Length: 99
Image (cartoon, rainbow, N blue to C red):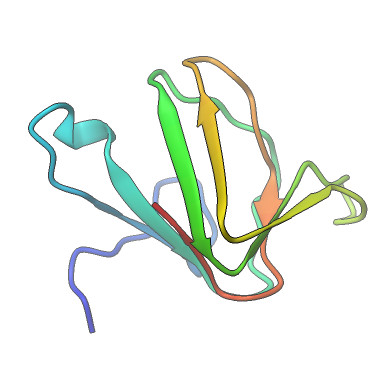
């Protein structure tokens, strides 16, 4: 099993990330994965630019407090968010990988 995976603070078990090496911004580069059916419960924002590439699985973003609605994306999908942009919550019906 690959090493370096950990659940980020404030996220439910089943969602994990690891730092991807980079000479530009090592602290801001991560890879994430989520088990099927695991979800976050509230929108959030970062203090850095975020480039997201959904390499496999699906991602449902912006659902209501009961898990209904939201917009569904399937791999391959790319998104870029500037610092401070609120996004989420998110969930996946299949295993998800985001780079």
